[in-house]
Amino acid sequence: MRFYFLRHGQSKNNASYLDDSKIFKGRVPDPSMTDLGWEQVRVAGKYLRRHNESGKTRAEDRIVKVFVSPMTRALQTAQVLHEELGVPVECVANLHEQGGLFLGERNQVADFLSPPDGKSDKPSPADASAPIVRGATRSQLQRTFPFATFPAEITEQGWWRGGFETFNQAVMRARLVARWMWSLVESNETGACVFVTHGIFQDLLVKLLLGLSLSPPSSTHLNGSLPPPFPSSCLPQPFPESGDPRASHLLCSNVGLSLLDLKVIPRPSTDDDGFAVASMPSSLPRCDSMAISEGKESTSSSSHTSEREACASPITESGEGEGGGMSPVLVKQQEMIRAVGVLLWNSTEYLPPELKTGHCLEPFRIKV
Image (cartoon, rainbow, N blue to C red; front, side, top):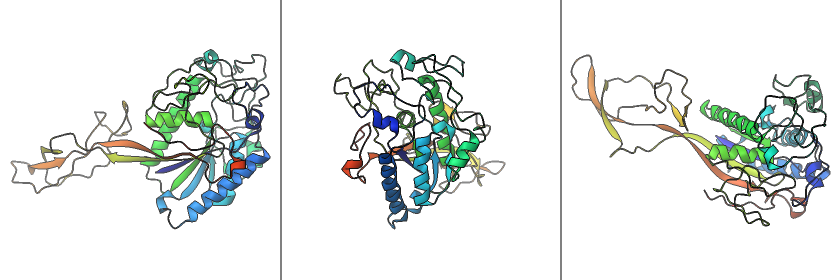
């Protein structure tokens, strides 16, 4: 299944700290897009429409749905995609940016990495006196963005629980999103979808999907007041001032377009020839489910007893067996695994130079 990742258009916060080396002290919790951001998104929407309508685009790669963060800049981006593509838009609360809605600045690394303390109303660590921000209510969202559907968890109390989301909490949320993505793949959904989300959360989510390590940030700041978000030595993009390859993340410009393919495929056998002899019924039952490995977890919902199980199918004629209709047959072991392919990252080639803004202005090749 193909997933298109599109970062939102330029927000008012983005426009206020174009110089990434300086701490931005005027941020707002939930900014809307700038006029430039709207222009960026209109170009992106037309580009995706041409892609969807192209005869070269496979049916399974055509966009059939948009999933979007509940943050204003993301919903505004999805609004244009809906107008251009004519596909349903569904808000997914878990796609919001790391931190959530909060007043004050993102603080130093120690606060950024602080573990959850159970206080759902804890203000941003940067400003303990700041009032709690809950975000738009369900009725406000439905009135402003009538084209989208919203989950039941978004109520009249506002979509955000309040307080500042820590790094550890964001990791837990990203794991939930990754599992949900795999459930879409394994449900045999047809067509592709777009995720309209945010730079930091997208970086974390994709690293989790790729199985890359999440090491603690260094003390060097990157992109304004942010510490290096979720750096990985596997993908070094050295920070020019420190030269530290850990001070890096998967950079993404405003409306940077990325493509990921998630598939469940057979793992090639590691046996001598991939075959084994087993006593099995001459007529095998249909294999209704099989365990799919993801680290130490199994997504099998039936009574499997091991993390990785094989679905066996006869590949030769069975010989005469002894008793009970059982006969020795050759079977090929078919362990199923999850595979992630990054086809494109942070493409803005469809934008004219004067519209390019964000973390980096050109796509880069990922080497893992």
